[in-house]
Length: 163
Image (cartoon, rainbow, N blue to C red; front, side, top):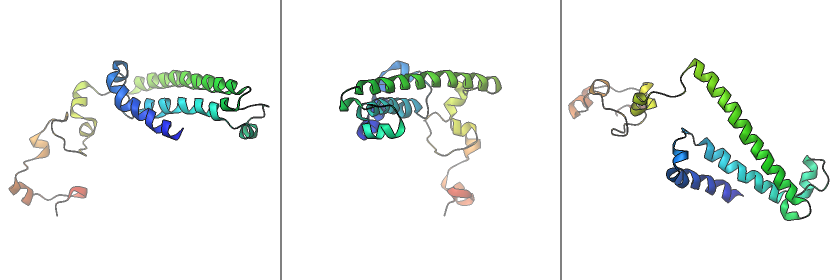
């Protein structure tokens, strides 16, 4: 279960996401879909498969509750896990959609295309990384002249101090 919980989301994030155009249209910067849905649903189903009967009794007072590998009514637990996963997916879609609609009435949910080209850090006045050509436009009035003479006379402050 541990190997699958790390490797399957990585595979979907790094390989499937780049090849499937539907996933590329989703604005999921933090990769929530891959780290929660892709990892969570198989984890829930595998829990139904490997649920230890003695531990199930501790949490659920239903007799003969067991995982699929223990035989008997074990297949029912896998079905319960699938139904639970489907409910959570449906709940998240509905509630997240409602929250996004309400927020969109107050502020826009997405930056303009022009702001996205500059980058969200630069739009907010922050420059954590100077990756020219990675969407951010070089502005000499903002960044200054980086000649060696100018570097010697300019004083720096904060975490980027020149020593």
